[in-house]
Image (cartoon, rainbow, N blue to C red; front, side):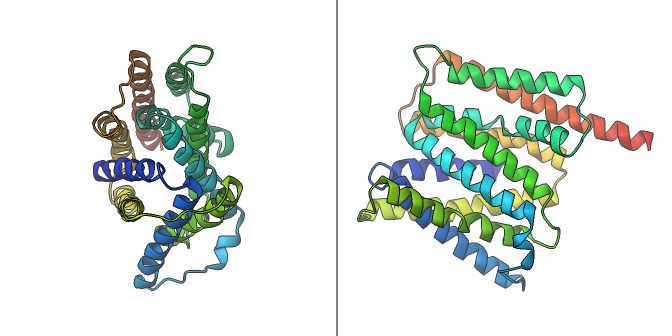
Length: 283
């Protein structure tokens, strides 16, 4: 999980760097194509079919919509705003997942976890600072991305079990191709990709595939309640990348808000684990 979060931060870094000379729509197209081909190879290696009939089920179609929403808006967030603040806002995703599980899957969430969710969302408001001089409207893209990725995770839980993570990876990267194309047509068309930008996009794609694979291994071989809190390592790596590579200087409100989001998320996850153990003992 720690390796996955480090790789995701590097993926964000290369996408942000490439976007200085290449339209984000074109980057998403190339990124989606490369990732799709890689996971198609993994899928064939496992002896699985690429086009499974289950891809037309409602959870998979919803997952595609949320995947597009999350990927597109987070890409815009890291391009238009500091990568450190965008990543900090994204750390609220587990809180939104817990809230969504209570609303859509009727999972029991006690007052303590609801309080932690509200506290975490307050941390997001500190980072956004709406109404204050430091408010950046483009930061709302990161908020939308948080909802998108949470929706994707919830839809994945409802996905037909016959689909493997490799097959889901194929579909997840594929939807970025038409999304990037639509954004590219709207923004004015493609540009010639120079050598440096091509290397950055290639590295972002390869690292993104590695990050997704590492995340899959972590979630399938480790106890979910134990490995999930290590998702917050992404914030640490993003802060390092932002400061060292892009010369960002997060202010005190951003740092305090980030800490509150992480504390709320970790408490929620630990409380979820305790609740599950108590429920198992009662059974």
